Length: 113
Length: 113
Image (cartoon, rainbow over all chains, first blue to last red; front, side, top):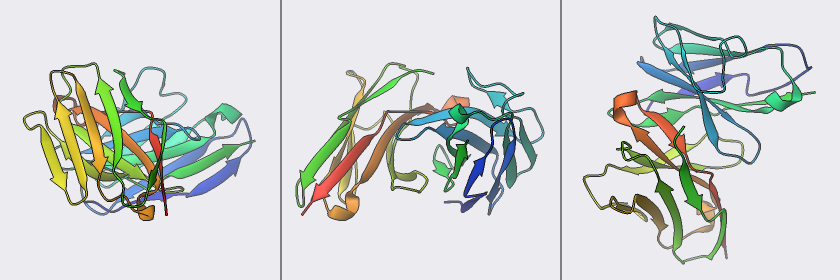
């Protein structure tokens, strides 16, 4: 399985600001995904990040709020824009393996005050 | 996203006992069913997964049972150990949609001495 790192591991941010979360993989992968996990809750897919094309967002998530970049096959960023306390969550990136497996990074714990 | 229903929400099992977690899905297009284990402060780790062409898959102390007609699958942890205490998530995906996963609500397992 791929080794996935995320930066930062945690952050405390003020409302109205933005935070960019980085996801780095130790090997080239086609599919990368971003999930949100609210405290004590399950995982919800935000978007699929495809290299060389626009990210595909799930219902309820929009590009203006969660812009994603995927400049190459080992890296992606998720920005949480104009944050509110409701954005306090763990943000997880994952990568698609072969043939169907999906592996997760350690997560970024975001608190918005 | 299509729902995946998971039960129970929490589970307490004595050391050496069998832990059983159940999931049910709605979308008959799902063809990949993984289980993830998550420890506090960590990202979910892929534990075991099954495709619908088999009814059971076993890896060590972990077994998935799959009932295609009932659209249900379950995780059995044999000889449960305190180190198994974690939150377990079932998920379902459709390989044709690039491994996009829908997660269950999670089961917090506590294995007591």
